[in-house]
Image 1 (tube, rainbow, N blue to C red):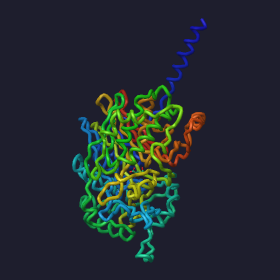
Image 2: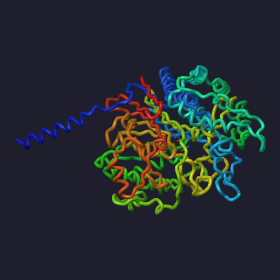
Image 3: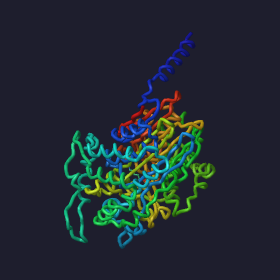
Amino acid sequence: MLYRYLILLIIFSQFSCNNKKPIRGVVSENAMVVTAREEASKIGIEILKKGGNAFDAMVATELALAVAYPYAGNIGGGGFMVYRKNNGDTGALDYREKAPMGATKDMYLDKNGDVIKGLSTVGGLAVGVPGTVAGMFEVYEKFGSLPIEEIFEPVIKLALKGVIVTKKQEARLKQYYPQINNQNTFWDGEREKEFEKAKLWMKTWKENDTIKYPALANTLKKIMQNGKKEFYEGETAKKLVNFIQKNGGIITMEDLELYKPKWRDPIVFEYDDLKIISMSPPSSGGICLEQIMKMINPFDLESYGHNSVDYIKVLVEAERRAYADRSFYLGDPDFNEIPYKEITSQKYLSDRMKGFSFSTPTLSKDLNPGSINISESNETTHYSILDQFGNSVSATTTLNGAYGSKLYSDELGFFLNNEMDDFSSKPGVPNMFGLIGAKANSIEPGKRMLSSMTPTIIEKNNELYMVLGTPGGSTIITSVLQNILNVHEFGMTMQEAVNAARFHHQWLPDVVLFETTGFNKSVVDKLEKDGYKTYFDSSKISSKVEGILVLNDGKIEGGADKRGDDKAIGF
Ligand code: DON
């Protein structure tokens, strides 16, 4: 009797556990756009409703983010896109910035060979040749279906009408006003000649204010009318070069004319029954993700439990090893031979994990020496699109740091990137993400700087399954990883996966970084007891994941990250 009672109790408790109502994001039947701002998601979805495809929506969404989310959305930066068409064809576009032709290996070093602080992160010299406008035209010319005016006009309208400041935006602006204002001073040699600040950002914007962007609207209108030539050869190009050079930069008209985005083969690999399609170099995202997932695949992660001690240990040790490889082997493939096959072979990766033990951490200094700090907060933005025809786009775009180089052209209406900091200014010296690099990522004229951006699309049984990506600098790769595992190993919905607390390790510094909420104290105590250094700072894991999941019944779920003002909209 007692035995029967116990069995009933077990069945009941299992039933009540499994019965926990899943938290779903936005569920819809046909299409979904997930971005960092409602205004951009709306513009993207309207393009789809008009009959446009995911590529038309991509162009409109990317430009809308430049208006609605100037923190990271841009026309003065660059990005990466992975796509999957409804016939299963996949591909990737690299519209990453490039070093100008006048760039040199030591351009950020003083005469003693030390890195001059700030030179690669703020002001004109930090700016890489922007790729976004060329990238958008490349996508449009290859796959676009609507007239270009139908794509640009809603964005221009938004810029003229203005965008309402959110609470989070008010806080971000407050943090960056001093730097933005400092950088927008024009210099003539040693002496300050004009004191001309970025007027748009002189006002202290508050929540619910409306910021209008007439200068950006004007620039976008000219680009719509004259095509990408306007940005790379025309009037806008001339003004841009003049502006950058006035602010100490070295980008020339020739640099703009030379800029070309590149179609690349994405990184494709398998994990259980999933086929993962992610970004290839010059992003490290796809290769690092492949390395980590192949290192963790032999472990029964599901049985350890989500964010448990053993789960965290396995991921941390795989991450440590992948990021150590990143710093040595990865850079622009047009300038380096990347030993892709070798560093992603199962044999190599299994050997690399041989030193792993649940009882003692591998010390990063034994993998390779070095000691560094993670510094300032940064921004990038990701959007995921699935259209009503079954085409999907996963794109991550950035100015690098928050508001990029902080240089804002009042005349042209946009911020310029500080992507040059993604190069390794000096071997072994960390960049703003604490990432170390070597020769593969040293500065060379016309070279693309190594990235961590990981726009990813996943198939299951040859069908589209997930579209995801995130900003977050060095934490991009590990955040994408955890979101995939949250769904695949732990059965979470897209929204639950996005909501779940994240952690990160990047080889150096040798610490496990945690978001401040969502981790069990006993788990952290045990990790520390076992020799792991832990560090809590949500702002350092600045990932904001935008994911789309295809559900069993064919409906689609959009999961937008509530850490920001992010929004999923579907129909
Ligand atoms: O390409 C990269 O890896 C960096 N420039 C990305 C910057 C970023 O994600 C900042 N966002 N939080």
